[in-house]
Image (tube, rainbow, N blue to C red):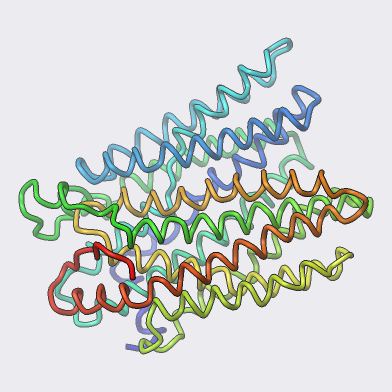
Length: 426
């Protein structure tokens, strides 16, 4: 089945409305972190407080998403995403209201940001969880279609994290941070509700409606060593994002162009979007575990020039190239994760994988910031970028450790659907 035919078949299975709402539904989350940073910083006059509020929002989202995913596996995504969308919009509105009042303590703003982060749905992992029941068990090209679906979802994730912050920047320039966050809240109500009410949501929960044994799927173990390694692998790419953004910010500040930091970092997403769509063109014989190892190796190779860059122009070129390895790595890890999950645990498992990226971002940004401050003297960005390079080196080791277990998992999947996760990592 050709890549073009795969995309066409997926479009037929999901429908045009799904494609639209599943992408737009990602924007509120991608807008909220930068929007919170700008909103709270403007309200308090402190970038430190704004950064704390944005970080707390991201961590709260990483913690809350798996909880929502676990509930969705039991009752279906529709009521969970609907409740999250409405609650997320309300808490974003609360944050905007609190920031607009005089004398509100900084702690109250940080708490409001945490509430918002805990409520906003992670649409990317939830959308991935819908493809398994959408494709169905009996389709002759099931694996090819699922791999293509995950390539598409990876590209959409990257596109949302380019468009979301850019939209915030435009709205802040034209109006204010409060308008940007209010727009995110409105999008969450409209598009989040549409994603929740889409017919595909009915296919989730109760074993993904794939003939799971009553009560059996929910009790199957999924947090195996194999899956834990995948979680750490995504934590590494999250650390790459956080450290790279920190290093970019430090370099932009040092050359007197702090306003360009966000635009430079967005270039990473541009290359990743292109590569995400292109991943579907790879031959089926180039299996996911090999793609993971190859893309991790490419991440290391392409990140090494960060240690020598000393200008924004050079950084743009390096970051653009680095982006072309990010999406293939993310897609291969999520694809392996989907295979390792038993029916009825897709929403929880994929939400955990998505949350690992957010936790990794916080770890990478924090560590890179400390090293940048410690080194200083115009080379702080090099110290931050060293965290990026280190994260890619760990990613290679993790990918190498999964080669044999992944082959066993593929063999189990071909012998009997659905496949069960491996219990060991060699």
